[in-house]
Each structure stands twice: as C-alpha cells, then as structure tokens.
Amino acid sequence: LLLPFLIGVTSYAREVFVPQGPLYRVVGTAVSISCNVSGYEGPAQQNFEWSMYRPEAPDTALGIISTKDSRYSYAVFAARVASGEVQVQRLQGDAVMLKIARLQTQDAGVYECYTPSTDTRYLGSYSAKVELRVLPDLLQVSAAPPGPRGRQAATSPSRLTVHEGQELALGCLAQTSTQKHTHLAVSFGRAVPEAPVGRATLQEVVGLRTDLSVEAGAPYAERLAAGELRLGKEGTDRYRMVVGGVQAGDSGTYHCTAAEWIQDPDGSWAQIAEKRAVLAHVDLQTSHCVQLAVTVGPGEQRIGPGEPLELMCNVSGALPPAGRHAAYSVGWEMAPAGAPGPGRLVAQLDTEGVGSLGPGYEGRHIAMEKVASRTYRLRLEASRPGDAGTYRCLAKAYLRGSGTRLREAASARSRPLPVHVREEGVVLEAVAWLAGGAVYRGETASLLCNISVRGGPPGLRLAASWWVERPEEGELSSDSAQLVGGVGQDGVAELGVRPGGKPISVELVGPRSHRLRLHSLGPEDEGVYHCAPSAWVQHADYSWYQAGSARSGPVTVYPYMHALDTLLVPLLVGTGVALVTGASVLATITCCFMKRMRKMRKR
Image (tube, rainbow, N blue to C red; front, side):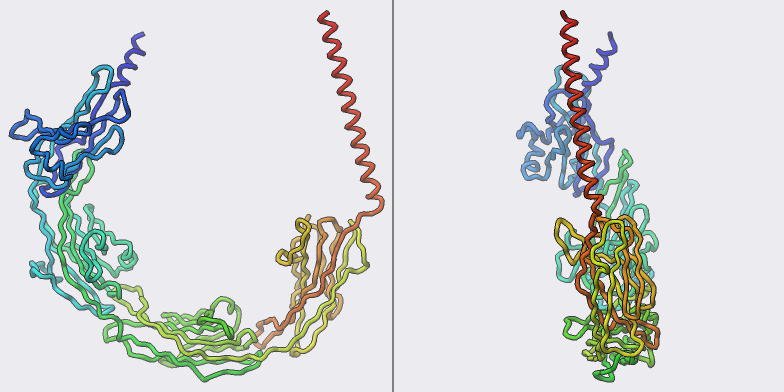
C-alpha cells in the first residue's frame, strides 16, 4: 500500500536547474544563463525571478528581473532592464534565459533563479544558484608584417597591390594573458572593397579552431584542399595566412579575428571574448596582361560528302609575365546554318594536350592537333552533309598559382567560318501491305515493304525498320509508336518487344524488299503498322552516315476471331448464367426450410 503513495509523491517533486558553476566571462561581453524547472504542478507556463548576491554582501539578494512582476528589478538593475541591456527570454513554458548584453565588473556574484510555487504542496527545490566570475579583457589582436618574426604593425592598415596569380601573405598577432586556461581561435576574413566591416559583410577565408584544426570558408574550401591556401602558427602568438595564385575575386579588406574560449564545468566550450583587426587593403591587378586573339582559316569551305575537311586556328596575344605558369585549351564548335549561338563542341585539346571529341562525334575519324607553337588543326577525314554549318575556334588561357589547380584567366572566340557540304540527293519511297488480306487469331501475319531508290552514290546501303501504333483508349498517337523489328544496313536484325513475348521474324526477301512476320497472332497485336526505310553511305574511314529516309503508308492489322470461337462464347456465357441461377434457387429453398424447422422446435 505504501509503494503507490511514494510513486505519487516523487512524481511531483519540483526541481530547478541552472548551469554548473562557476562560470567565467569577460567584462564588456555578453553572457546568457539558462534556467528551467521540472516536476511541477499547475499551468505549463511557469514564472521565474532572477536575483544576485554580490561577494561583498553574500546574504543580500538584489532583484534583477522577473517574468511576472515588471517592478521586480532593484535600482541597481532597473535602468539596464529598461534599456534592454538586461533581459529575460522565455525559451518555452518552463525554461528561460537571463541575458546581459555587456558585463560589468560589479556583475560578478552568485545568481539565483527562483520559481514561485504553483504546487498543491511544498515539495522539492524552488530555486537554484550559479556563480559568475567576471574576468578582465586581456585579449590583444593586431596586424603583423609577413616576415619571419612578427612586429607590431603601423596604426593605419597597409595597402597592398598584388598581381593576379601571385602569392598573398598576411600576418596576425593574437595573444591573451587571462589567468584561466583558455584557447584561442584565429581566423582570417575578407570584406569586399568599401564595404562596412561586420559579421554580415565579412567572409571567412580560413581559420584555426580551438582544437588546432584548420578550416576554410565555403568559397575557399577547394583551394585549401588543393594546397593553394595555407594557415600556420609561428611561435606563441603569430599566425600567417598564405593565398597562392590570387584570383580576381580576392581583392578587398582583410581582417584577423581572434576569439577566446573557455571550457565550462559541464564540459561545453563558451566564447568569452572576440576582437578583430584590419590587416591590409588588397588591390588586385587583374590578368590584363593575358589577352587572346583567335584567327581561323583558310576561309569559306565547299566540299562534297566523303571528302576531308581541314580547318586551321591560330592563337595570338601577350604572354603572362615571367615567372607565371600558363596553359591553353583550344577547341572547335559548330552550329548548323541559321542556328543561334556558338553551337556544339566538335573536338578540343585540353591544357595537358589531350584531345577529345564532342557529343555525337564519337567513333568518327577526327583529329585535333597542335602543328606549331600556337597553331592548331582540325581534320575530319570524311565529311557528311550534317557537318555543314558555321565553325568557330575557342581558345582559353589558364594561370597556375602556388598550388596545382589551374584557373581560367582569359578566353576568345574566332569569327564564324562557313562550311558547305553537298547533299547526296537520295530519294526513298516505301510501299507496305499485309499479305493475304484478313488474318485470324493464332495465325501468322506477314507484312511486306518494297523500297524504291533514286539518286545516291555507288555502294548505297538500305535499312528498314517496322513500327506499330497501338490503340490507347480508342485513339492512335504517332508519338507512341514502338519498334517491332528491323534489318540494319549491315544486314543485322534488330528485334523489338512484342506483347506476350511471342516470336517475331524480320528478313530481307529481295534486294529492296523486307518482310515482317508476327507468329501466333493475338488481340494484343492489333494496331497500325508502317515501314521506315533509310539509306546509308560508308566512307573510306569506315564510318556510316544516314543519307536519306522515308516512311510507308499505314497498314492496319486486326486479328479476327474464327467462326467456331464466335459460337463458343455465347455457349459459355449461357452455361455460366444457368449455373448461377440454379445455385441461387437452391440457396433460397434451403434457407426457408431451415427457418421452418427452428419454429417447429420452439413449439
């Protein structure tokens, strides 16, 4: 009988929690002290009252602020509470945070968080205390020259001019003489030129954390990983940042920020001080020295299909200054006649001299090579009518900094160079039909396609494919045409997917006649079929290109049912109806008979 009573008592034992002390904070900085209550009765929103006890009067409580009474503050805190320098923030119904924006020396003492009772009986703790000790501000931060030994920099920040691609080195002196064990975190940041300095405008470049790990801001993470950005500690108080291969966006005002951290008794780390110093205003001299000019030749081209196409590209311009590492990439782009923009990539040489082909040109005999110091040649061994269009040569210059990563410094594109390729003049026609007329389910449907050709070069090869448009909701759509099968220009058959996995046959039955056979015809084969022939030409480099195409008229395939099948369906339906009717009558008679038997037994 006693156990339930004890459980009921302990479940409502009020307890107030504040951080474990003592807490060390620095004068002039902000401090936040949390307080929450649990095990209470009454409303979910509890009230809180904050007081403090100064060392010189440890038994005298000074009211700071209350969530219930706006006149709770003593005179020594009233003005600071009214101005918002001291405030209480409610985190939730049973938790608050006491915030002091700027600590004063006289704020040192013991802070008490009290919760007025809402319980039916007085049980548990109604307040908790934590000691706050205020330390003097001894953190110092200043600029230092990038030499091997740090010295105090001049009062006014220096102005540096750095050429693009060069190395930027900045030094910072950061130290503290706080008597307690603290750690320093030092970071270098950049603000855009003429922008006001603040957390919103300062972009971190790289920083040394309290655990001595080095991390970079998001825009600089890749450069840190590549070794272009470095940060090190030299001696006890000097930090040095090196940015290798300065880029166009690296200009601005650089700052050094030092933050002092201390570990609280609960094991968490708290920042107790932060100071920032301007290191230098950095102006960047951009890569105006890298200017590219691109010319192409030999002029407008008119060639026939299968003939080679050769274009030349010459890159000129000023070289980067001595001591800089430069690399170039050169590529050719082609846009069909009348198409906007530079077009698609044909081929290119990257900065390492490795050639590659653009999408759609794989498998063709195309060469991109450097034939002189700044002259590049594009050669297509066998041109096609689809190669006609406007060609441009694109050159890019890259600079390499202290790291290994290249970055683009300049680019230029040539004037358009027209190229005309004569058409083959191939005309195709196709006629398709269903052999034998009507077809029935279970039989084999044979579709024939005769192709006629006019024009074209010797050695022209033909291919033919069969397509079907199946009805969906009573309508046909050409967008939903599916491949049934076909024979390529090399004589290799290609089969599509037939519903039900039934067999398909495609074959060449004459020089220009193709046949499609659908075995074991079923209702799922219903649809409109057509034949699509194409003409292909093979050049000396063994590459193929399509010189013409056509499409036959529609051929409707409807699998009819045999006469015996049409008689069998009504028979099966009639038999099914008779069986259902008989079962219903039998169930009704049985039900009535059982009801009568139950009435007789009751009598």
